[in-house]
Length: 435
Image 1 (cartoon, one colour):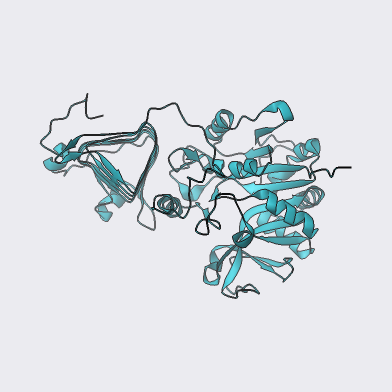
Image 2 (cartoon, rainbow, N blue to C red):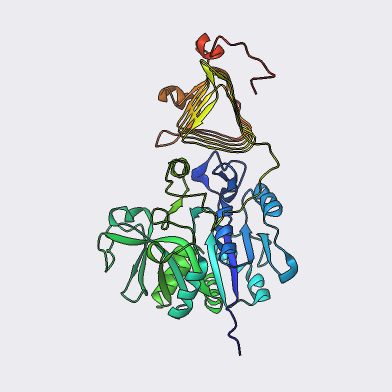
């Protein structure tokens, strides 16, 4: 008799408010934040699960979920022929008049989904980290271990342990302790200079997850958090194992340079740095690996266009990623990511920046070390990322000095803009050409 493949159900936790990513999360949930020109953050977790062969997935949503719901409905429609689906699942007050009170509570309130599917194993993944991962390898390892839960661990230098939930494991991969941001971390047995940082991805035996979240729901002292409560309790009960993502992850098309890449884009500085990871000649995170594609919806837009080849009026972009519908008209773009329908006008300079959809950068403007959200018009002669004091008076500036302008924000023209910034060149503005 043929061996039955294990039945695996995916749960993606997409309810986070993402306050540290403000103003990008002012009008949208963190998993819906655009990334890499064409994508949303949630696309990476979903692509990993789908590429791994797991086609039944619930996406648990909560805060400001409209744009996330719309993206899932437009992008992630699976064929129903074999019962496949990706379903956004909002808080529905199934257990009382309350919203999700933590990631563990979100699963507890949706146990009906698990009981309906009757899976053997459940992948519980976060919705807003950047990585490639073959989840089937982690599932196979989990089954072999006999553990109730397996936690994906990323090897990081021990001096960075203070920034993570740290996994301490024995030589057999069983987790001895799970400690949040320890000041006295214990190095790995095979490399004392490293520790395992939790990636927030878990594989559970279904019965173990149901029992754990049900028990947690009865504990009034719990924060109902997957890492801080569920995993910690299962570690104490000897039911947890670790998956060495850095060494065991083997995704088709990956290289030694990008195989172990994982980044939490929970802050503005991390979000900007992750974009800079994309644009080097040999990127540390390679979106061009078509053997393990990252899926998304691409709007029906024309190709990008670069116009004018005149002295002081040459449209160009180098070391950059340029999306469909972008027009670089006599301006210069360096080390930046331009999202669909962005426009860069004559004499403008964009450097080390992330420009989101439908942003218009006026003639002679300078934009450096910035993130500009959708539908913002940068007036001619505006200088962003040039004068730190001026930036802080007018805009939000991160600890790392990244200027961020929110969606639909109005940017006032600078009162002291020199005429050379306003006109950029001796060429007259031509609305027919300068587009």
